[in-house]
Structures are given as C-alpha cells and as structure tokens.
Length: 130
Image (cartoon, rainbow, N blue to C red; front, top):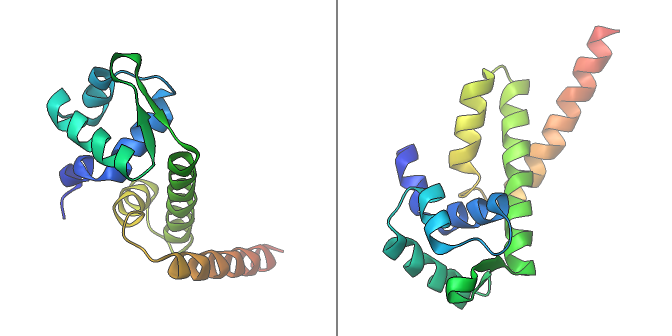
C-alpha cells in the first residue's frame, strides 16, 4: 500500500482534525488532507455517523471524546512502533514512515507485546552501557 493512500483513511482525517483543533472548517480539513472539499465532506459525514466527530456545517467540525481517544490511541501505537523499529536499528526516517503505515492496521494485542519487548530491549541496552 502506498503512503499516498493513507490520506483516504478515516484515521487520517481524525489526525488532521486533532492537529488543526476544534471548529475547523471543511475547506481547511480538505486542504490539510489533500482532497477536494466534497470528498472531505463525505468522510466527515461518515465519521459523524460513527460518533467520532460533530459537524455543524459552516460553524465547523469538532472531534468527539471518542474521536479524540481514537487519535490518542493511534499516537500511542505510532510511538510504540517507531520506538521499536529504532531499537532494532531501523533509521529514524524509515521507522517513522513504517510506523505511520502500520499504526492503522496493527492489532492492539500486538501493540502491547511490542511495547513490552521495547521496554525489555531498552533495559538490556541500559545494562550493556554500564
């Protein structure tokens, strides 16, 4: 899957809304995501139906608590993946790029195991440096 396709994922819209802040306009969101306003509107209506955003027409778009929680979870997953990749020797730019792709696909149980392994590896690295 190419990185270009990520802009069409619902999570990408949520992340953009999180970064832009509450009350963002549809045109601002469309610009941030790199799509036409009509495409962004369809996704916003979908996200509203899922209970992740509130869309008030010209007054703007707001993340709900569930939407905010989803983005915060994705940020946690991204951080865990990128950190794990860096620990095993993947260069930072590639680690971040791969984490961005995988954060939307990986099962939460796998994330928890990755965090545990990363913690273990960090501990071992600290011991070896002594």
